[in-house]
Image 1 (tube, rainbow, N blue to C red):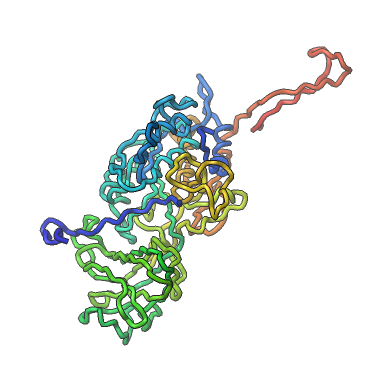
Image 2: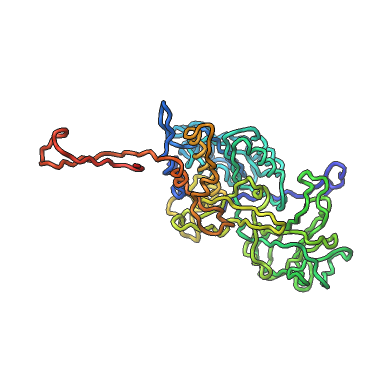
Length: 534
């Protein structure tokens, strides 16, 4: 709080809440992502080739760098007397590199670690390493890089800006900062826009917040009986029914913790804006006797247009949300709250769910990716937690671009799960990596495969709109707000623009004349065995 005394040099000071990454608690290596086969990128590597006068090689991502921004890469300490986690992954073939015994498949260029998570306290997930294992499964010839993105929004922005002016990059993140704008642009989004002109792509996980959100425009309640704890002068309340009901009822479960953020469509001082918010919206938890239960609100004018609210339920029960403006009637001001940690919180009235995509994922050029369980690849449907896009109350329309698979195998022991309800997920010893953190890498790595092939097939005047190609050939299922233009089918996209190369596995010879026939003298039938014949 003392920082706010230095108003001449500090515009805004607030707590930095830990950002969310989108994991929910590969044949190259020991653990191979089942999503590779589900989206048919494995068949792309087997059946499409880059042919030059000198050689013919598989399409494998060579010439493209895949860059992952997440929490950490190899920040968890190894077991006593054991090599680093990365070295173990390299030896197993789950990552490229030459540490220890080296990658057994000949991919010897190690992951380029640009900036690791610098701290050692707590239990880190090393989600970035799991994401890169998936990338290596799908595009094993691609160069791989990692940079932590969770230290602060500014540090994340600077990490992205390092790629301005580069080419042939597929950049991926699975990060949601709750303290940046949920309306309009962000500094992170602007940095991404500056990176893309080099022919790069930027993907982000859509998030794991389902449609756990409420949105509206502020409507002052008429003749409302405001609680006594509110300041008298200038305070008005939002009418959830559009007339006079200032309370929105919800229920909670004992022992659960909840985290909710209220955003409204005004400027953020922390986004280098010299003005900040002009209004002061607040969110409160109130009981049926109008007593304050939770209310840790800031004075927002000239600062950021958001409020955090976090609490733990001491018993099963019900209470009410109350949203007020401490600066008088702001008019039809668009706002939304997102329940980032829901834990059995049920909003019981005036609630149909709303978009939960926020921050830089709303940037039009950013490709947000939804999730489908790989076990349902034959009949794809959205994971229920996969975040929703849609129309916001200010008229903007964030979208999901495409979707792919999650719940897949990786060799990172600190994320994922072996069992759900005591039942093995897929019957193998590897933990399964759920969440849009996993699905986003599948889509991005398929793009890397395509980008590695196009220069050979089309030359410098490449006419292929890669995004539209994948969208046109995606499996059209589910709600577009969750799954975008469909679930990735990499094989269908490649077959749309190129011919597969036949693979001959062997021959069978059957003579049509009596026993003792001689090849070249007597008739015989030759059967050619293999795959992908025209």
